[in-house]
Image (cartoon, rainbow, N blue to C red; front, side, top):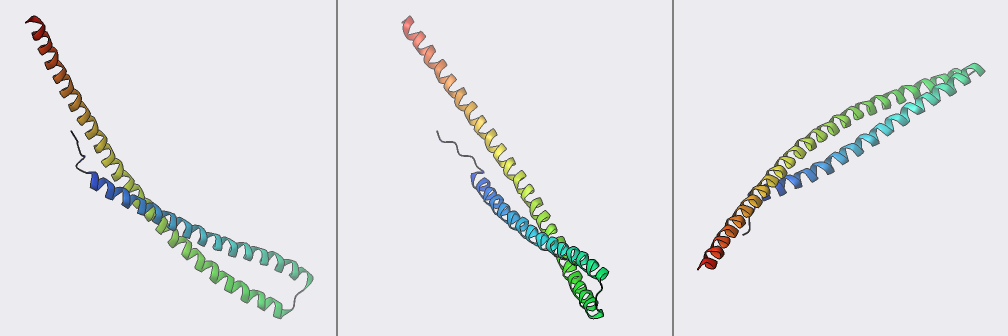
Length: 147
């Protein structure tokens, strides 16, 4: 006898959705890491330039150099602000993808558990039928020996 799990197609569909969600999450994670790395580089650059500027100020700088530095720092601040905004967006997207993945993972586990229970029920039914047949055969053999 072939016993089919009635939700096999649903389980397969859910597993495919889960795989898609995993790839989407990995892409979101990669995007977050890329943007965070760019933000880190900008912050590091700002720190380095401020340190260099302090050293140059102690040695003496022209007003023109100070203006260039201020303009550069203003532009760098805008870039940093832009990347901070992108990091926030990327983090939110990554967290949303992670939540979706967790939800799909739970659904897949539910269907797998249902399938597991179904298989156990089928095996118990098969064992019960086999035991029933063995009892019947034993009774017939016993009856045949008496005759």
